[in-house]
Every structure is written in C-alpha cells, then in structure tokens.
Image (tube, rainbow, N blue to C red; front, side, top):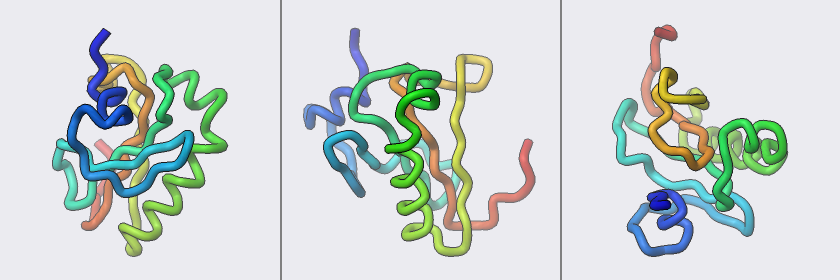
Length: 106
C-alpha cells in the first residue's frame, strides 16, 4: 500500500523537515490553509485513534514546541478522523496552523 507520509519518513519523497527524532517527524504541509501549516506525526504508520490512544505522549510535546517556536502569537492544532472530517491520509498526523489570526471555528 502506497503512503506518501511513510515515503517522506523513508526519505524517498521530498519534504521540508523541521524536526525529527526516532519516533516523530515534522514537515511542511503541501496545503496552504494558513501561512504556517506543518504536519506533526509518528514515523510509524498508524491510525489516528492509535496515535491518540498510544502515542500522544510523544507527539504532543513536539507539537507544542514547534507551535511555540514557529507561531509565537498563537497556533491551532487539528486532528481529522475519517473521510467526513476530511482526513485524506491514513497515516496518523496533526495539522499545526498559525502565522495569522485564524478566526472562529467553522
């Protein structure tokens, strides 16, 4: 099964990487909903539910560190579960958005 995020982790697809350790990787999202839009994710392929239930102790601190560093005036962290929520990739991930006033929720 093809997974673009697994290929980015493996180094076979290009990405602007901001952070990585043994378990977590952070890189620019190709989508541009906000001036700063990065993805924070486990390197291991897993579902959103698996990430939230077993991996947030590794993902959460990295997301907060990156948000604080890259968006000092504030940021938003989003996590989509399933197609109705517009999850387009099966590999678990968080969206971190900032760099502007983000306005109210939809």
